[in-house]
Image 1 (cartoon, rainbow, N blue to C red):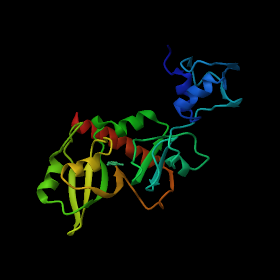
Image 2: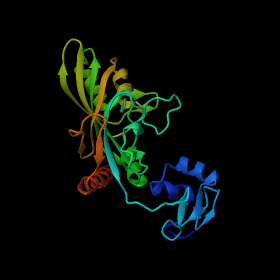
Image 3: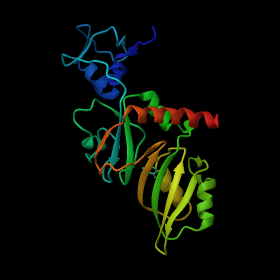
Image 4: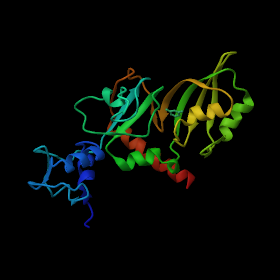
Length: 248
Ligand code: URA
């Protein structure tokens, strides 16, 4: 197979037409043609540069690689279609955007910076624990978390899916009822902050992701976002390769 060829479902999702799963469904349903002929096998190899792809008769043109940043509010699930019909982060994206996939996830009860992209290599590099790209969270936790427990969070705690990697933990505020911590993690396990805090005997009351690598949450209003500028994408790419290089 020549370099540059892709399976038809991947070519459609890379072009921003839809997700790969949606592409597979559209192809099987006979809505996609390659050089004027309907193709019903998602795994058919195509050359996205030379072959003419159409979806419902409209040309699918390759678009450039885009990264969108969203200030996610609480109450939205990070998925394209929720089986329980809850509000999803896609309800917040501008209609004119091509299809972009979420870069990792934020829980429904977590707010903060969430990225979307059609660059699957970049998305993988950002979320892959082997890249060690730091992500920072501010967690308001129940009760007072002692210095020894904060040190345990920094050193690594044992969760059912293994010990957590060393993290940066800073105490931002504390009183008799709550402790506010800033945690910087280089992994991205499911509900990791909440589970780490539970492992030291507390509970997260409120969680915000405030930074991904070089990108701070910024001052976009909750529920809105924008495409990253070229220099922001370049900084993100550089941070991913620097972070990966540091630990290899
Ligand atoms: N850790 C969590 O517990 N939840 C998130 O959404 C992200 C990180």
